[in-house]
Image (cartoon, protein in one colour):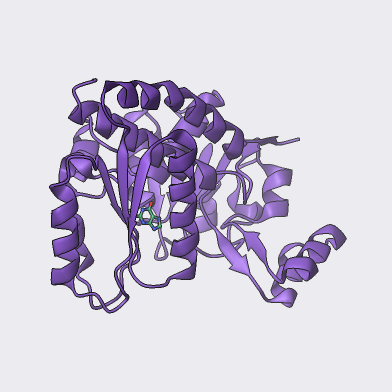
Length: 306
Ligand code: GUN
């Protein structure tokens, strides 16, 4: 039986470990502060931001949501970021992506003060990651490493295959695995013989955004498989195909009208992997936990506590 890497449990552990650090900051003068900028009405982003704000509240972190309309211009958004950069009580700034097409996302990410960049997206912080220097790391990749370490999954000397080359997940997770001495291959949509390369991975990270694409022939028997995908399936026939008409899953589909599926085939991974992250309940909860870690570290730095 494959081991399930329970992201919810690890998230709870990380958040409990943060509580005394938040309390120490509050006792010294003020709690950590996070500003989340959410532009317009993007249903998935609204859910993510709500969860981030809730995590802050549960931990005692001050949070503030700034919600400009979807028609906001680059200049207006730069003004908002600039104002947050100057705020003494704000330690972390997160501009939720994606941004609307009229906004120059690169200019916005470049405008966030590197010391408040709790997403680790600023080129200065990406440079620190590449060079192996301290600095905030992108939350989902940092969460993946935390999960692997806390479950004692060996990384050094292992072959790791990352499918997906995004700036948010694929590239940074590959670098983090490399810094832990894995032998890392990054694959993407133009990689030939993708299944054969994936099958070499003792660690396989899927961050592609295509539901259940990683099937049995991509998975080395006994591998550790990390599924970053979060795809909502609202087509009943597609859900039936993916879950091979499982009565339990189809009943869940009929109740909710949709199912969440990762980038990895949920039945194949359970049969072939040595350990894997489920969807939901795997990588997802860790992204928010690492955002809280980055916010607390930023507050500690800015108030001289570390
Ligand atoms: N959109 C999807 N994931 C993320 C993330 O980690 N940070 C931000 N800012 N936006 C996202």
